[in-house]
Amino acid sequence: EVQVLESGGGLVQPGGSLRLSCAASGFTFHNYGMTWVRQAPGKGLEWVSAISASAENTHYADSVEGRFTISRDNSKNTLFLQMNSLRAEDTAVYYCAKLSYYSGRRDAFDLWGQGTMVSVSS
Amino acid sequence: DIQLTQSPSFLSASVGDRVTITCRASQGISGYLAWYQQKPGKAPNLLIYVASTLQSGVPSRFSGSGSGTEFTLTISSLQPEDFATYYCQQLNSFPLTFGGGTKVEIK
Image (tube, rainbow over all chains, first blue to last red; front, side, top):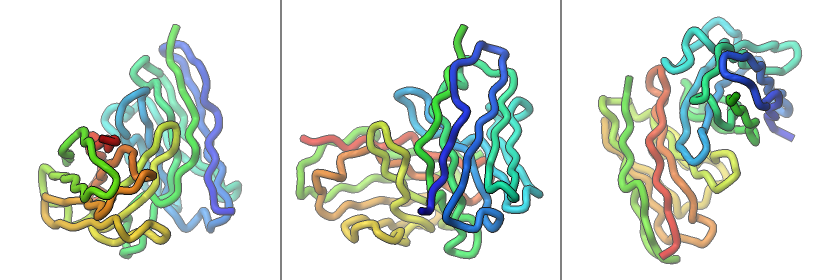
């Protein structure tokens, strides 16, 4: 089955760290860029970070630049998001998603996980 | 950064209605716009990419159009399962951005 499955969420204190994982299956992981998107409770979608297929290129939203690090292990078909210096405003469901290239360049997020909840609170 | 403004933010409609949602970009995005549907407690689901191409498996009552900075998502005849929140997204340049969402509710 083609899927991505997030894990690693939980409750953490402000200033703390958390590492999210996203296990991919059913597709050739090392051929696709991957991304993280988050959604705060009752709010809209916010793109967080993206990484190219070979991990050569990474991109971040301004709101997480310098605090979050995206990485991947293509030998284990796994995507990661290391989150440091967490703040209350980072509280959200975090989704990983696969980038599609139907048009020949990145054009959508065509496969999403079910999400993992991160709560930052004292 | 490219800002996406969706309108309306809330829409009340009946089954069978034709519904149109607009997404305006703060600058040109070369047609790299996607639309997603999200139901409560679920992950978003891709409907349309590159402004007008229907994702495999998505019903043909959904369509997308537009170019430059103005784009639309149309549902030709609203079905009960279409009541959800819809988001546009630009993939032309980083940071990738989403519109604020349009919640479609039953009248």
